Amino acid sequence: MPVSVRPAIARLPAYRAGKAAPPGPNGVSYKLSSNENPHPPLPGVLEAATKAADDFNRYPDFGNTRLTEAVAEHLAMPAESLAFGTGAVGVLYHLLQALCGPGDEVIYAWRSFEAYPIAVEIAGARPVAVPLGPGAVHDLGAMAEAVTPATKVVLLCTPNNPTGPTIGHQELLDFVATVRDDVAIIIDEAYLHFVTDKLAARGLEILAEHPNVISLRTFSKAYGLAGLRVGFCVANPEIASAIRATALPFGVSALAQAAAVASLVAEPALLQRVEEIVGERERLIDELTDLGFDLPAAQGNFVWLPAGPRTQEWTELFTAAGLMVRPFAAGTPEDGLRISIGEPDANTLVAAVAATLPRDR
Ligand SMILES: *Cc1c(COP(=O)(O)O)cnc(C)c1O
Image 1 (cartoon, protein in one colour):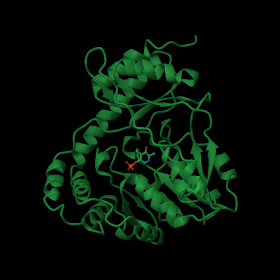
Image 2 (tube, helix red, strand yellow):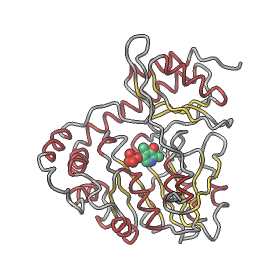
Image 3 (cartoon, helix red, strand yellow):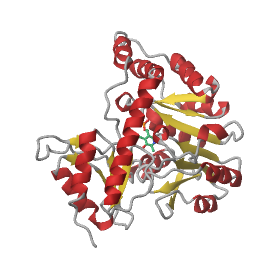
């Protein structure tokens, strides 16, 4: 008899490697499928990481000491409230492992970040997906109603990947006030730097008053360190300590720790890049809106093109033009494409291809 895999794991979708877009008609291709930062590392970051590489016969600092100090100072939060991991996804895995047991329910919106259902299943908990409301926003009313005595965690993604809208700050406060105190509310703020809506949720501000709220952050997006795998969460010290106890030992490499510290120092250059990406996002939104596309609010470094049954067809047309975009085709009317904001030339090409897409009028 073969060794059996846990049923929850056996049901997980197999990983499919993303294909590189073949060069378009003018010989170039752009990867706009993973919400990566198109910029090279911030000033000083490559130097710091390269220097750390001198010692990679050694394990990294187990306690992420310098990084913890730097982030604590940067966010003006106590060091005990921080826990790091191999990307925000690594931290999320540890969080769910630390909090959930069999039978516990984890509520999240759908569509949202694809890692959520997988992380919940791996932790042995039960995923509860609540459909997004009109405009592809979190339906917090429905999410509050989905809470049962078995609910252990609610995951909120703002701005929501892949659709783009934020949760309003007041809306978040009302939601937190409605939900039981013993339900953890994880606010995934991976795209926080790109948010320009002044009324959008600011997770960190409500942490002190609500010990069940956890803010999840990453160095992968605005800071452009996706390949080095470093993320963290800000939580009450008991939860942060539980995550540190659960975490893979030495998970965050010395290179990643050094690069993250150097990235925090390069704040002015970071803000300038973020502003550039946001400017490109607004330009693309304007151009797509002029073409007659009805887009949800885009507050991350990506736009969502509702494509419904044309999702696969449109993806192929973008691919043929040298643009690798991310299709979400589940065979539902909510299907669509997520397109990351890339280099200005890439964004210009996105609008040019969008103008040629076949549509029902
Ligand atoms: C990209 C992303 C993350 C960050 O993932 P890392 O593991 O830190 O690279 C977290 N949450 C959402 C919603 C994301 O899109």
